[in-house]
Image (tube, rainbow, N blue to C red; front, side, top):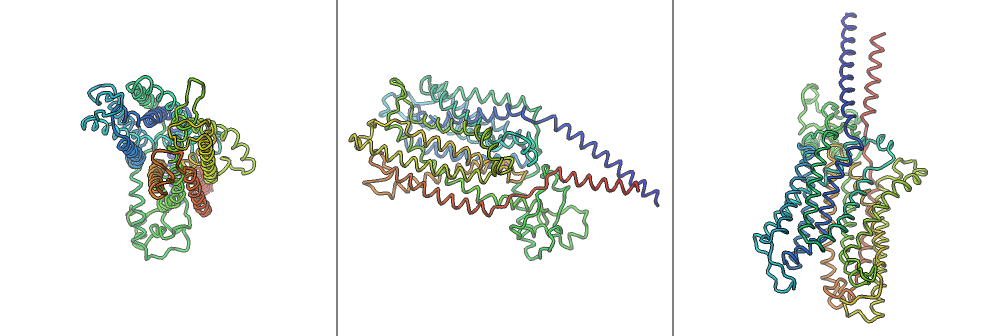
Length: 599
């Protein structure tokens, strides 16, 4: 009998050695992939996407009204619908990537769809029979035919679908190339999300300067053709980098897993919870595919969901049988649902911030009435004033990374300097200050207009430099460094590992809902703020009360900040048992078995 036990132990040791050898080979293979060398390929793809979309959006209203001879209101509504659709499609792209396609193939296919949309709209700008005749007077112009408009609609739909596959996957696919555990993040002296935002800012800056200039001075054929060529190059470069990428295999629909937890909890709602949460169902082998970085630990919130992990007597009879996941869920899967529920209130706080930034269009109207001369022969286009926000974002990300984090780390002892929630809170405060500055500048502009008797001359240039608007643009850039980047990092860090693309899609949906809320706010204020002294007049901004609207936005943001602080105080960060800790425990158990076998 002792000989049999010794032989059995030797077999176990040999099997364990073979498993360890296979794991070591797999680790070496994964180690050869990924890393910082993959970022030029991945971020290059997103750079060209943002370059194309920024140049496309910034001046598209002029293309629709001047090239297709559309009226202002239908053109504006079309672009609003297109922007909203482009912000909602990432949710479907994320679900496809997380469920079965994977992030790499989702990006590749979506990029080709995006490229096809750009080709269609570029051809419509080049070929004369795909657009109405030119009309320089812009009076009694012949509008685009239904077939010409359908070509436009198809191209916009293809671009929106392509955006839905690229946006939620690029940042998460970039993160897949690195060790994003707490230990891995602490070991690096740079933040992936900061540099991602820097690249996106550089793309927007390039588009607002290069592409818009080409569209206005060299024609729309080149103005749309250059982003199309850039997108094609990015697809080629991204595919060429495929041998270097570390890919994460999708493991079924996360929506189905969340639904299974809810159904199981409802079915066992009358079952009593055990006193010790360690008696709840655990299955490392079942969860291995969706917890490669580590396993979510049990939390004491939303205990009603814990009932999905109760093991009944019937289920305990055959412990080797595969569980029915619609009746029994692991603790890890229950905690996935809890993580999403905890994130939603914090996620929602970003909606009103985006809604408040919808006042950007009115700032452009302010700039149009002011002295925009940089030199005697050159005037700054009103829409180009947003360059100051982009420049501040780019410079701010670098300063945040190189100066702010090392300085604040001395006091907080946090490798990231401050937590993501603290970073978001600072962004909310700076955004409120920026909106207040906007109100003060508008009061100053109207005083100057009254001084020179220009209140009833909406087309006149007020003798006040447009550079008075620069501080508020720069403050909005600082707010984005903290709030926007912090919001994205929070969603990535606190989302379940298997739902990272879906979390990035939530970030895009924040923008969509915020824009719609901002549109509703503007419509309500315009409708109910009176006729004679309307806050947001149709024509003469000098007789409006735009400063009051800015004060209203500031008040809304203050309430939003209070809401955020309440949510942040009660927020519980997810508890993760990293895979290295699990391996250490397994090694310890193996050592104990080896010692026992030798004894």
